[in-house]
Image (cartoon, rainbow, N blue to C red; front, side):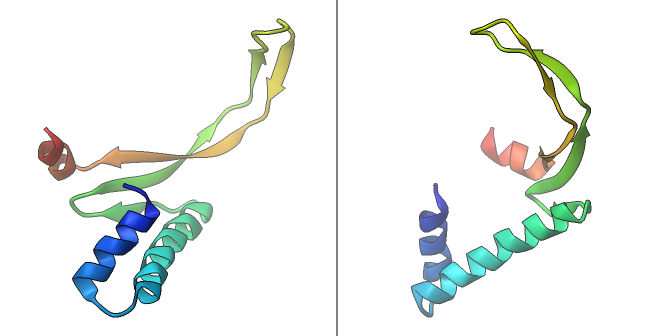
Amino acid sequence: MNKQALVDVVHEVIGGTKAGAEKVVDVLIDSIISTLKKGEDVSIAGLGIFTVKERAARTARNPRTGETVQVPAMSVPKFKAAKALKDAVK
């Protein structure tokens, strides 16, 4: 399922226009992203928890040339599925 398919499902459920359904999906995604940018967690009951993890700086190696490359520290998103989601997928 991609974003457009998600918009179609939201449109079927809430009715209205497709533009309105797309706006709902966009607001949801933007809200999750902006909350993660602040360093806060997003917990959605039955789905899971979105968090931000700090990844330390490290030295990596280019497999093609063999030269070492310094990879800077960065923040990466992380998702932990809720038990209800895990059980539903089984």
